[in-house]
Image (cartoon, rainbow, N blue to C red):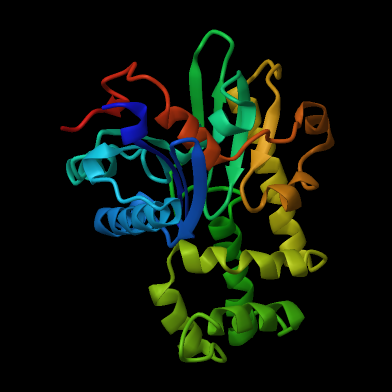
Length: 303
């Protein structure tokens, strides 16, 4: 196929939403949609991606067959081998498919493919580095609820305990606990106003719902509970960087929706290593989509 007949597509997918950038005949469009993190289901992930692919083609004014679409995806959960294999097995007959973690596409975008380190802070969290000798190192990425330190879901899960304590008498109700309950109520039909309704909310809450509480924590950053959580988040970011690069030589970019807020929470010694991200995860994914097929293990061409 000629370049004019191939639609290049980069995807950044997580537990809260998906961004897609498509390139065809020198033109690019961006579309966004719902979650496509693999932890929320393989069928759901592919449904979101296919829907966005259709939207992108409409925006470009074309409708190429799916076999003429070449995708590179950075998806949360791609490092879990069973999810990864299931996702690849359920792929439609694309021109090409490269599946990476969202951490790697974030790394590629942030440092334009050059050596560096990132800590991605969104619904979940993960850290990755590319060293001068080509080594790739990953830290975290174990997923919700056991991992994802310093992420939106991690913060929300722990902050929800303050709402629990305020409702059952272990802590005095305050503006923070009420704001948490209001945020929970906005996600369901039954307002969270008592132990029974909070229990109901918690029984069905996933990482996306918990991450939606992160803005409340940031708005009440001076509250002792929120303050302690944010301080711990900063320390966890520093710990991830140290594991990525014990010699502390690589530049570090904090990426994702919580990056700006949490940058002020990291230990001050880390300031000397922080650099702004040069590009986004979806830009990194699109860059990978345009790369030649160099690794059969990482890039699978489907006929």
